[in-house]
Image (cartoon, rainbow over all chains, first blue to last red; front, side, top):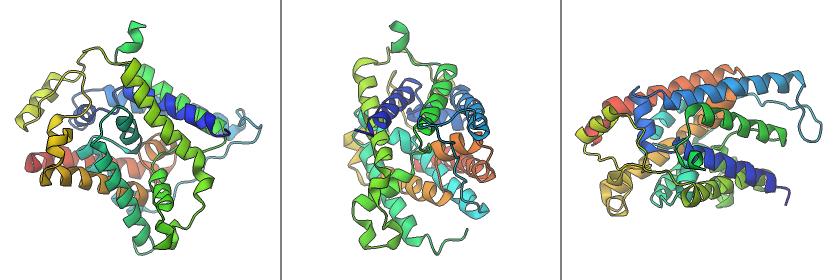
Length: 137
Length: 185
């Protein structure tokens, strides 16, 4: 059961996303309408505190549980890929009111119809895979 | 205990998400959810159709464990940590949604108009959710990450591609909310 710890990490994440209402379709709509600070507060404070962790990882002050240096993977570069891909994702995020994490959390919350969004998302990833070599970077 | 049952404030939730990121790195992996969509393609046999998916998905079984945990976490919250009927959604948001034909039920996460099983099995209802999914799956993989991988991990490690991606997330989200919603609904 080497993956038990990751299962627990997922459970904590799932509870936080539910209790913070980050999985709420209404919260996402409210965020894009600039009618509440809530989602900005969640993302902003998560990023700010993660920044401290990232700094300590890079500095080597915090090692992983085996005592190894923690490396942060570099994201693929390319303006078109990140901007166009990001915009396409944003359209879907606002329409479904859920990003990939919350899709699974909503399923656990008993929102069965989110399975259609999940089906679409897996198909979307599949289409990307088929086209990946032909798409501009 | 009552405090647990209430919706959690942003200044509790945000730091807890950072803690989840910390745990993932502490256990030797990177934080991000959308790569799992590709892993699911690989598990479903997409490697037979495209080399892109010819990967050993067992290398990512830890991430599948996180996804399973997300579902269990949602189930636990819903069963034992249920929100009391507190409404924190802005009244203006609710009025705006009413104009588009959405009703807000206190404590619900998704509108019936989109997610109710009756509405899901109409052509329009099904198409909306499927297209939303396609946009999410294609967009995150092209961009190389979603809210967790780009917005949280990428921004906090000061990576320029993630800043561009997050700007894209908002451009897309604003276009959908402000321009396309009134046309669709």
